[in-house]
Length: 304
Image (spheres, rainbow, N blue to C red):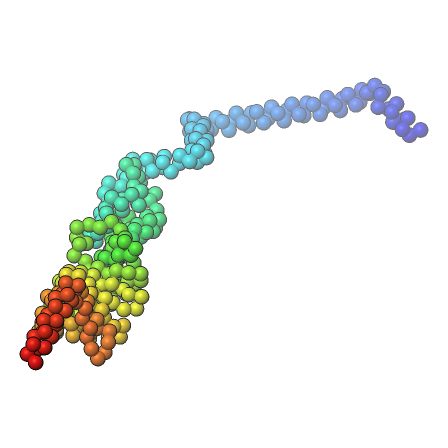
């Protein structure tokens, strides 16, 4: 019964009282809309001229900027913009440069025609330059408005290291600096063999201990990663002991000074025994010595 009465009530015609109430509500909504329009018009009347234009321009700029960020063009744009404002990198000053290549340093810093000093990441540039094998330490400084300063501390070329037929330039610690040899590297001492680079300071100290022989030593060969053989320019092999090689080498220098030992027709001087020196003659010298011994024996036999 209740549902039926409700259905009938919803289908009946509105009374005059209900129509009046509905008209009042619509009138109120219209008046509210009119007041809103009037207030908005008054507010717009107080907006300074061109404010709307600037707002539109700003919105357009933000839209373009967002698009550039998504497209990866923002860094290029801001580099060019700040460069045009006077922050473009006009010069790179490199101090302490001896062995390293200035072009390689510039490539590592990655400075272009319109690069901005304001946006340059100095720490990233420093880490990139520090990767160059010649560089021991580096500082990258931004000097505003448009100058970049790079202060280098280079590794010093200390010796040449030959390993498996390949030559490398190494520093005093044995670290490989480059495998590209330059004319100035020709005068560096040469060490040969596996692990010789890690003992290069020891080899150079050994060679420097006898200045009179230094120019005659062509290479220091590291044998079994524990001792040295010195090779002269004439191909003589000076075999030094593992213990106290300086003393043994000093003995060779003394014999060369008094007996002209290294000028003789020999191929090796073995200093490894503590109680004697073993000298190996060349094949020709050995044959000559055998013939000499034979002739002496014959002469001795004939005399008897």
